Amino acid sequence: MSDLRKTAPVERFVALLRGINVGRAKRVAMSDLRALLHSLGYRNVRTLLNSGNAVFDCPAEPQAKLADRIQTAVAGKLGVEAVVVVKSAKDMAAVVGGNKLAAVATDPSRLLVAFTSDARALARLMPLAKTDWKSEAVHVGKHAAYIWCANGILESQAAVALLRDLEGTGTTRNWSTVEKINALLQRDSA
Image (tube, rainbow, N blue to C red; front, side, top):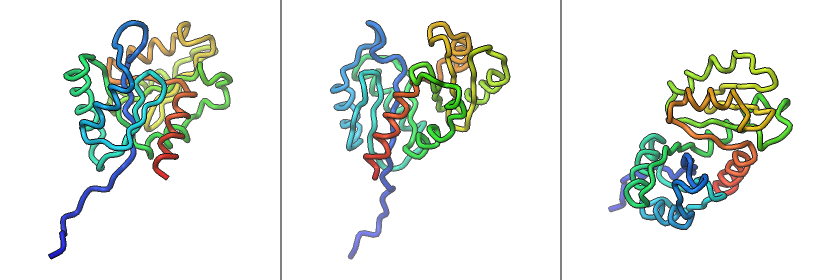
């Protein structure tokens, strides 16, 4: 008798951990993060940079559920409290394709992308896109918000407002990192 049970298709995801290895707080070795994700049953785990970006394969399930599982495991096993946002390879490709600030952003290290798992938090950012930020700009898309910090991230009033309005539900990456994550997701899922 053949096994008629169906298994969920395997998908490619990225986990974005907020505030990992920034300064002296929330130190996590990427080898420990990879091992933790393997222990959760995720496969083909790869980390990018030293700032909490982990790409992995697993059976399709809601991204919020994946994020909660990873956040709980990181706190319980690595002793670090960090917001975790999970996006699929398809979502990340849409984030890259939805960048309406590419024409004005002349330095990818000054273009931030804000990710959240909470659609309501993303919707709360819409008024920021209508604000005159002088040399800065904000665009809120379907999967992320984009912030052009013309004078640098530390000097950006738009970035301060955006992080305040995310209310601890999200994390940011600069455009260079977003493109690297997307390339890793697309290459490994091909």
